[in-house]
Length: 167
Image (cartoon, rainbow, N blue to C red):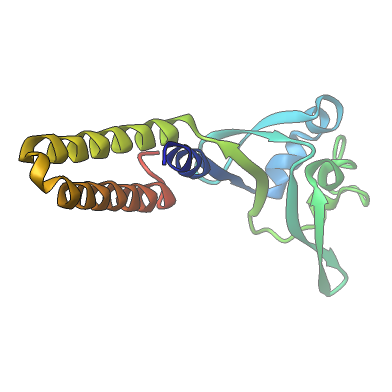
């Protein structure tokens, strides 16, 4: 039972990290992205985010009157943009004006784990109190009630974590 709870807590602590940013903002950081492999950019939410050249994104590249969808790394997007955003080999300069979403993969989120541990401890304490406070004769029904309380609390926890938790 403890292993199952640990697995659920660790799985719920992983979050998908994305950054929404305009391609021109990335192009302005082309030197850092190409040579150092990372840069700090401001997303559309106004918050700074660390972007790696190896992160992936989907973009629409202008190709005459058409737009061609591409799935590429940030390095590939900004490789020709170090000196001129309008250079022919600067893909970021030839994208639509809409912001793009950069997929940074799944990462561990410590605050979500802390929230999960807190909820599990509260549920365990409440279930233990239900079992200890009633008496030995009703132990079977108390265990069932305690199990339902723990399961219900874990269900609420999963909903909270799935919707963003306290972040």
